[in-house]
Image (cartoon, helix red, strand yellow):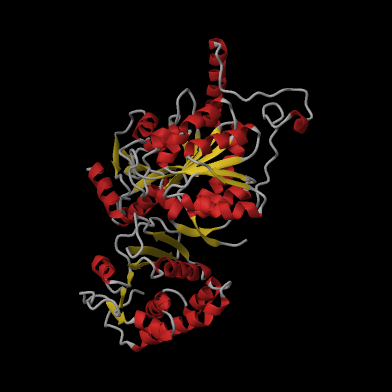
Length: 356
Length: 188
């Protein structure tokens, strides 16, 4: 299969199939409904299951059910729908089941709007639901990257037995770009014998598995939380992923930006370079765990005077950037909300204004 | 070198599809492309537009304020986008539905009655294809043969529509080349 021109939402659906995921439950919401539209046609062709639930809440528990059976499963939604799913996501994390959630973000709060946004950063990276847990969160900046991340998300969810989120913005879902699909995922089949509730006969085992998030004994729950904590610490050691742009030169300012916003920043950085103003960029590809050392190292470059966090939210990533920079450089923010994607000119002006 | 084309008109005029076909044709020629639709709260008969970015290198920002070219299929689209087109870009105006001009003297204005021509060829539905053929012939943004091939492939499972669409493309091309080009310096 060569390059094909595909809408982000459809490519995400196809990528899940290529990753061997044949279970998809969803409820439509702009700007991600094309995933369901695409998979409702495509999954039956490959003997998969597509079911439209009566609500996002129902869908999220269908995901929990399939995940508890050790099946590869995913769902997609957009901001308000993801909020409705957050209860089940907490249960899934508590019960240590692997599942993939795709959030094609739109503006908020509340019903907000339907245009691109990055306003769910804090929700996604700081543990989305009640209780003490985290998601591994990947943030694609192109349709191609969305495909690659969806395909990586399933083995990662299984590696950690934890939900993984793909955090895309409306543009990633709606835009068409050329994509090349990697070959079907050849990951080792996971060993689910000691946890999945897929029937003892299936496992040929004597052990009765129990999937639960209820631990009434405080000591047991504390121990469970310590297990989860160790898991998130392992993610921080093993899953950091970022991209650097224009960091080989002596840049005066460092931009930290992700997703569609980082592409606008790239154009702004190129244009500023033409004016003789060097700006570097760190683009987190995985936003939880956050690439703290990379941001710190890039900020500590002698020529760098300032760090600017640029995002389509009112500064939700700033605290992660500040935490990483550890006070060695001032951290500023520029952004816009509501579906307005800042233009390269606006980003250039914002960078210049911060630098002055 | 990067060029951007804004396709704009009423919902139902095939705006998104003609943009997609241009993107496909450019991709087939090895260009990097991005197709960005408007997806606001639209309604039937409301405005529809999409931006196609064609570039020799990887596309950074897909958000474009000032496109190189514009295809305006209705009047609101022309009014909205003609002022932001880059100097020397092609502005194709569907003169069947728009009685005004772009009001600029630094662009290559091409007013063609694409809806009437489409009707003459057999279906108003192919006005977008007439416009696409005319635009590509005029702007030379992609090779015309590559566009023909793409449009043929688009209708591979509806073969009976291929001759009509080919006629639409060729008629658009013919008309675009008949109109004297404005004295606009072309970007190299």
